Amino acid sequence: MRKIINSTYITLDGVIEDPAWTMPYFDDEAAAFAGRQTDAADALLMGRRTYDGFAAAWPNMDESDPSTGAAYFNNVKKYVASTTLTDPEWNNTEVLQGDLIEEVTRLKAQPGRDILMYGYGVVTHALVEAGLVDEVRFWIHPVLQGGPSVSAPLADARTTLTLAQTTVMKSGVIIACYRPVPR
Image (cartoon, rainbow, N blue to C red; front, top):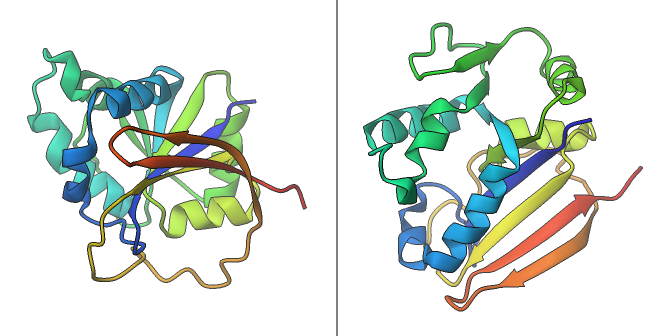
């Protein structure tokens, strides 16, 4: 069965939105870790807000420059959980129809590599609650950004995770990888 891996950039004060603050920390070491994530994944799963942000940015990047990651993001299979998006324009994108949990369970059962998610909002939360997310990787940046500390209110956000791995980068970024504790 495929794994769902969530990868979320976060500041010390819990901000995850508009991660332009990550750019000073995205060095060769971070790029290598990110590359290992994308190499292991043959699909992206995202909510509508993440889709809108990614679809606005990635198609405008140079796919011929391997350092941008644009070739991967523009061509990988993308699944969007949305009740309002009907005709996605970004290449190789499919909107999940019907019940989110049933659709993602079906995706996990298909042959393939990891399914990668970015950001932590209502879609990720619902999948964690349903036991469908296999690992959450928080890229903790040594930045205090200020502002809202989550992208969306997460009602009943009660999940216990266990630390699986910690990577400390020279830049000060800590990647803390957690796996849900079986219920």
